[in-house]
Length: 508
Image (cartoon, rainbow, N blue to C red):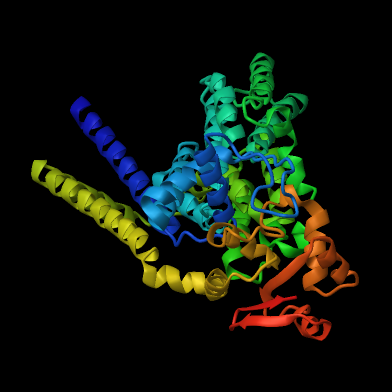
């Protein structure tokens, strides 16, 4: 009997491991995509400068509107890593980075889940459909991973009574140098502090609620973590990082990731599916909703409705909460289903018949099948990673996203003067056309509303656009062919130098 229990336990562990590996391989395949992003290019340029100079770049390099001004570069370490990956492995290395970091974040979320393995796998895949919108070759990927790690430590502390909070300061030191999204971790901790306090106020003093003493430990390590953020080249300025970007009001109107969700877009609808599954699971489980889970969901759902770039953090915190309730809801539903006696008899016979074949030969074949499945999925994932960054794929993607031919023309003919280009093209110019400092690029925390509003003023041909160009001595304008300013420049004495289906270049 003991040997039989050990065998059953080993089979269960083997099945659980198989489901985990298969899930992570599927996520790897989902995240393996062409490494192209409008901000990727200026991150690479900043990483190159930091690596070459052996110190982080902390000023408005490669821009004439912010030349020499202080830049709170909170992502300098990620940028150096990205540059080295690109230098050694090109776009394949950056695509691999995104896929690997997506898998690591998913693994730490999976370890927080409860219930049947298949349910955990299903919820993780659904969450990954939400996360897919924010998977890109940018330092934000580091924030997703570190947020998942912080969530795992908090899960161990609250639900498993295992205290590894001393790791929090170490994580936040790393976070302060990888990306300014460390605020996500602090918010996650803050929701637990507030939630556990609310649990006590409501009289929930069961084993699921942290004791006041434990809550005190969490507050202490949180405070130490905030101080640990100071270990970075920006010093105390790092505390301002979360506010500098959020305060730029132009983002919500002209940068898609900062806009509210558009659920007419099918790619954004998985967020709704995950949200509806969360509500249904909680409502049907019959289990008390923990106050920490409640406040966490409310906070991150609110953030996601404000800006779609917060879809990822919402998915990371929601998946474990769903599994805490979904398994119980399904168990209760199955218990209420009356299965006819003949069906139960049939099931028992099938189980007995299958047990006869669970000898060494059967187990050997089972291992072969499992390994074959894992190998097949790994082959699919790595094959996709290889294919998506083949020149035949990337060249077309580049042509559709960036003014590739226009940049080649500029590099060949070298027209003189300061250039104003599209917001999303600024980083590409910083990397490919280095003789031309940009007017603006994706570093919104550096340019702020002042410069971004001036850029909008010009491309929209709003009142005062000529004064903006005169102020910055702009001699070249490269924009999309459908911009309002294109219809006016010829009338104001600007000369057309180049035009294709995507871009048009003027000079004066």
